[in-house]
Amino acid sequence: MAWCFQCGNEYTPGVEDCVECGVALVAEPPADAAEVGSSDEDQMAYELHEWAGESRRILDQDLTAAGIAHAWQGATLVVRAADEDAVDRAVEGAEEAGGPAIEPGVETVAYEVDGWAADEQSAFSDLLVRLGVPHEFDADGDLVVRAADEDAVETALDAFQAGADERPELEGLDANGLLTDVFVACDRLRRDARDLSAIEQLIALAPLLVGHRPPFGIDSQLWNALGERTTGLVDLLGTGDPEPAEVSAVAGELAGVLRQMT
Image (cartoon, rainbow, N blue to C red; front, side, top):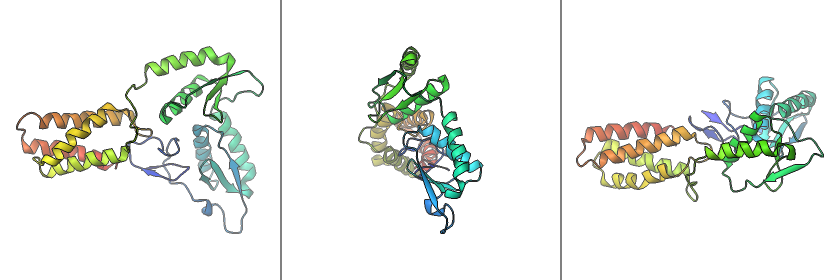
C-alpha cells in the first residue's frame, strides 16, 4: 500500500500520485497533527503552499528519516516547537533538492498551463528540475521561468508535448467508479461466462478505458494494459461462441488485477 503524506489517502499498488493533492505517494502512513508531540508541548506550522509538491515530498522523507515528529494539514507542515532548528535545516535542504529557485529581481516569462491536466503539470515540472531550470507557479497557476531560460523551456515544451498522450481526459467521469464497473462486469463473467448484462456492460466500458488517457495518479502503463486486456476480453466475447471456461478464466484474471485497484 502507499499513502499521500499530505491528506492521508491510502492507495493500492499501481497508483503513483495522490489524485487529490497531486504529490507522489510514500510508503508509510502519515501522522495526524494531534500525534505530533505530547499534549503539553507547543507546536509550530510552516506554510509551504508555494513549494512544488516534489519539494514537500523530499522534506517529508527527510523528516521521517531523521525521526522528527511531523504531520501535514494540506501544504502546511506541523512540527514540535522544540524541533524548530532541525526542521529549519531540513527545510533548507529540501528547497535546494527540489530544484533551483528563481533569483529575486530577474526578468521572467510566464506560460499559461491551467488547461493542462494535473499530472501533465507535475511531469513537466519534474522535467525542468532534471534540466536544472529554475521555475515556479504563480498565484494564477501560470508557469514562471527566467527569461534567460526561455529557449531551453521552449525546447523542453516541444519535446514534452511531442510525447504527450493526446487522448482526452475523463471529464465528468470518476476513474475509480469506471474501474469498479469494469471489475463488477468481469467478476460476473468469471462466475457466468454467458451473463448478457455483464457482456453488454463490458462492451460499453471498454472504449472508455482505451479512448481516454490515464487519470492523474494512475500509472500510464498500467492504465493502457487494463484497456488492452479489457478490449481483448471483449474481442473474445465477439468471436461467436467462445468457450465459457476460457471467458471465465480471462475475466477472472482481469478482475483480480482490478480488485487490487478498487
